[in-house]
Image 1 (cartoon, one colour):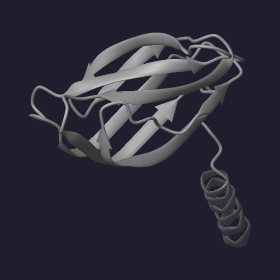
Image 2 (cartoon, one colour):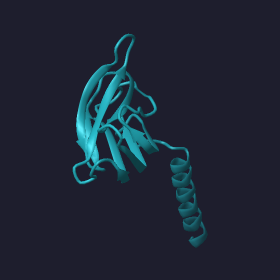
Image 3 (tube, helix red, strand yellow):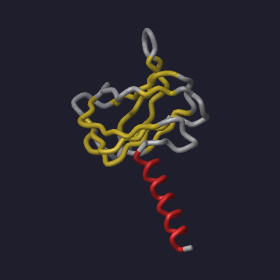
Image 4 (cartoon, rainbow, N blue to C red):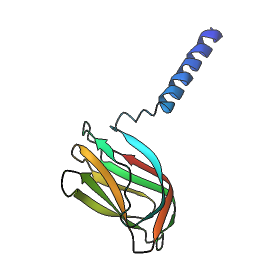
Length: 132
Protein backbone atom coordinates (compact mmCIF):
# COMPACT_ATOMS: atom_id res chain seq x y z
CA UNK A 1 0.00 0.00 0.00
CA UNK A 2 2.82 2.39 0.89
CA UNK A 3 4.46 1.71 -2.49
CA UNK A 4 1.29 2.72 -4.41
CA UNK A 5 0.90 5.94 -2.40
CA UNK A 6 4.57 6.87 -2.95
CA UNK A 7 4.22 6.30 -6.70
CA UNK A 8 1.08 8.50 -6.80
CA UNK A 9 2.88 11.31 -4.94
CA UNK A 10 5.87 11.06 -7.29
CA UNK A 11 3.57 11.15 -10.30
CA UNK A 12 1.83 14.28 -9.03
CA UNK A 13 5.18 15.95 -8.33
CA UNK A 14 6.49 15.13 -11.82
CA UNK A 15 3.29 16.50 -13.40
CA UNK A 16 3.62 19.73 -11.40
CA UNK A 17 7.27 20.16 -12.41
CA UNK A 18 6.49 19.53 -16.08
CA UNK A 19 3.67 22.07 -15.97
CA UNK A 20 5.92 24.72 -14.40
CA UNK A 21 8.87 24.13 -16.74
CA UNK A 22 6.65 24.13 -19.83
CA UNK A 23 5.58 27.68 -18.95
CA UNK A 24 1.89 26.89 -18.96
CA UNK A 25 -0.11 29.98 -17.97
CA UNK A 26 -2.72 29.80 -15.25
CA UNK A 27 -6.09 28.56 -16.48
CA UNK A 28 -7.67 32.00 -16.08
CA UNK A 29 -5.10 33.85 -18.25
CA UNK A 30 -4.59 33.43 -21.96
CA UNK A 31 -0.89 34.12 -21.66
CA UNK A 32 1.94 35.92 -19.95
CA UNK A 33 5.66 36.49 -20.14
CA UNK A 34 8.36 37.39 -17.63
CA UNK A 35 11.25 39.68 -18.53
CA UNK A 36 13.28 42.62 -17.17
CA UNK A 37 14.06 46.25 -18.01
CA UNK A 38 17.58 47.58 -18.20
CA UNK A 39 18.13 51.34 -18.34
CA UNK A 40 14.88 52.08 -20.18
CA UNK A 41 14.56 55.77 -20.97
CA UNK A 42 11.65 57.82 -22.29
CA UNK A 43 9.93 56.05 -25.18
CA UNK A 44 11.72 52.70 -24.86
CA UNK A 45 9.44 49.80 -25.82
CA UNK A 46 8.90 46.35 -24.37
CA UNK A 47 8.71 43.22 -26.48
CA UNK A 48 5.41 42.63 -28.32
CA UNK A 49 2.78 40.14 -27.23
CA UNK A 50 -0.27 38.87 -29.07
CA UNK A 51 -3.56 38.84 -27.21
CA UNK A 52 -6.10 36.63 -29.01
CA UNK A 53 -8.80 37.81 -26.57
CA UNK A 54 -9.96 34.25 -25.88
CA UNK A 55 -10.68 35.09 -22.23
CA UNK A 56 -11.85 37.97 -20.06
CA UNK A 57 -8.51 38.59 -18.37
CA UNK A 58 -7.38 42.17 -17.82
CA UNK A 59 -4.03 43.03 -19.39
CA UNK A 60 -1.58 43.89 -16.62
CA UNK A 61 2.05 44.95 -16.34
CA UNK A 62 3.85 44.18 -13.06
CA UNK A 63 7.30 45.54 -12.19
CA UNK A 64 9.46 44.69 -9.19
CA UNK A 65 12.95 45.48 -7.89
CA UNK A 66 13.09 48.82 -9.70
CA UNK A 67 15.86 51.39 -9.67
CA UNK A 68 16.44 54.71 -11.37
CA UNK A 69 13.73 57.09 -12.58
CA UNK A 70 13.58 60.57 -11.06
CA UNK A 71 12.25 59.31 -7.71
CA UNK A 72 10.95 55.78 -7.38
CA UNK A 73 8.50 56.96 -4.71
CA UNK A 74 6.70 59.10 -7.32
CA UNK A 75 7.37 56.58 -10.09
CA UNK A 76 7.00 57.02 -13.82
CA UNK A 77 4.37 56.34 -16.45
CA UNK A 78 3.81 53.22 -18.56
CA UNK A 79 1.66 53.32 -21.67
CA UNK A 80 0.25 50.29 -23.49
CA UNK A 81 -0.02 50.54 -27.27
CA UNK A 82 -1.79 48.39 -29.85
CA UNK A 83 0.52 47.76 -32.80
CA UNK A 84 -1.54 48.58 -35.92
CA UNK A 85 -0.91 49.65 -39.52
CA UNK A 86 -0.38 53.41 -39.35
CA UNK A 87 -0.01 55.22 -36.02
CA UNK A 88 -0.27 52.78 -33.11
CA UNK A 89 -3.33 53.07 -30.85
CA UNK A 90 -2.64 54.22 -27.30
CA UNK A 91 -4.57 52.25 -24.67
CA UNK A 92 -3.80 54.60 -21.81
CA UNK A 93 -0.94 55.35 -19.49
CA UNK A 94 -0.67 54.53 -15.80
CA UNK A 95 1.55 55.81 -13.03
CA UNK A 96 3.88 53.01 -11.95
CA UNK A 97 5.85 52.95 -8.70
CA UNK A 98 7.28 49.47 -9.21
CA UNK A 99 3.90 47.81 -8.83
CA UNK A 100 1.09 46.39 -10.97
CA UNK A 101 -1.15 48.28 -13.39
CA UNK A 102 -4.26 47.04 -15.23
CA UNK A 103 -5.58 48.05 -18.67
CA UNK A 104 -8.74 45.95 -18.76
CA UNK A 105 -9.71 43.25 -21.25
CA UNK A 106 -8.12 44.49 -24.49
CA UNK A 107 -9.34 43.46 -27.96
CA UNK A 108 -7.32 40.92 -29.91
CA UNK A 109 -4.12 42.27 -31.40
CA UNK A 110 -0.41 42.83 -30.90
CA UNK A 111 0.59 45.05 -27.95
CA UNK A 112 3.62 46.55 -26.22
CA UNK A 113 4.27 49.06 -23.46
CA UNK A 114 6.62 52.01 -23.37
CA UNK A 115 8.16 53.98 -20.54
CA UNK A 116 7.46 57.69 -20.14
CA UNK A 117 10.25 59.40 -18.21
CA UNK A 118 11.70 62.91 -17.99
CA UNK A 119 14.59 63.55 -20.35
CA UNK A 120 17.89 62.18 -19.06
CA UNK A 121 16.36 59.63 -16.66
CA UNK A 122 16.14 55.85 -16.97
CA UNK A 123 14.59 52.95 -15.08
CA UNK A 124 15.57 49.33 -14.56
CA UNK A 125 13.46 46.50 -13.14
CA UNK A 126 14.83 43.05 -12.44
CA UNK A 127 11.32 41.68 -12.84
CA UNK A 128 8.57 42.41 -15.36
CA UNK A 129 5.48 40.26 -15.82
CA UNK A 130 2.86 40.94 -18.47
CA UNK A 131 -0.43 39.02 -18.24
CA UNK A 132 -2.96 39.15 -21.07
